[in-house]
Image: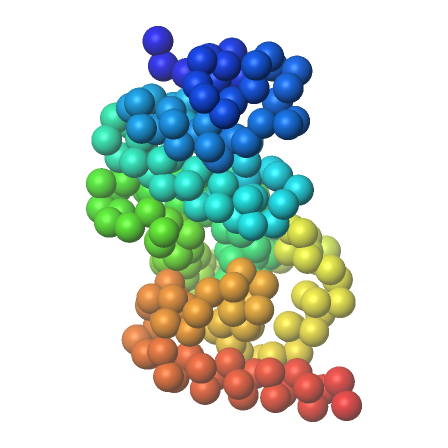
Amino acid sequence: MEHGLNDDPTQSVVQLEGCPATPDDLTSAKPLLCAKQWEEKGDLAKARDLYLLASHSGDPEEARHGRQETMRICVDLAKRCGDVDSFRVIVEYHQTKLVRLCSHIIGATCIEDIHDLVQETFIRAWEKMDTLRDSRQVSAWLMRIAARLAYDFIRRKSRERVFRSQFRVDPSPPRSEGLSREYVELLEVLPNRDDRVILHLHLVEGLTYREIAVVLDLGIGEDAVRVRAAKALRSMREFLE
């Protein structure tokens, strides 16, 4: 029976060299080593759970490696056998990032719209997992899906306004999840929405200019994204002076 995320990953680990003798010894174990051994034995579900455990390590390097390996195996399991537990991990890793991205694109006028866009992003991703070629690009891949949906949402709302005499906007829109009020207000200094999104993706989400060009699909290349980011940063600095 396949090992699930809600099971205790220490129950079978005791059989492998270098792993804890009892579940109580888990804090002194090396989950990365155990995960590698389970992966070599072909049990990717157990390896996934242990890599996931390592991703919460207090050691930054071990945590980073644990996150990378967790995503690699989760993408593999979701693609090859439609493993729901693995896709759930992908969702949990990325949902906050996608909420922030969609908030910046559509202006966070309605939190329900943002959550609908994020949910639709994951539905599209689940249906198209076989098109993801490189597990290392899963974050950029999900952001590109979300960005396209968010820009489509804006265009759809614009068309709806043509047929409406009134359009109500929530007077107290929610702030972007996980971000300070000061950061959100500072970004609002920039008049161009795309510039705000470019800066957010680069400064907060850590995407390269090349990745941003792919994610936003604005018809501009890496160099143009870099120039826009530099101009936006200059505008923000001038505002603060």
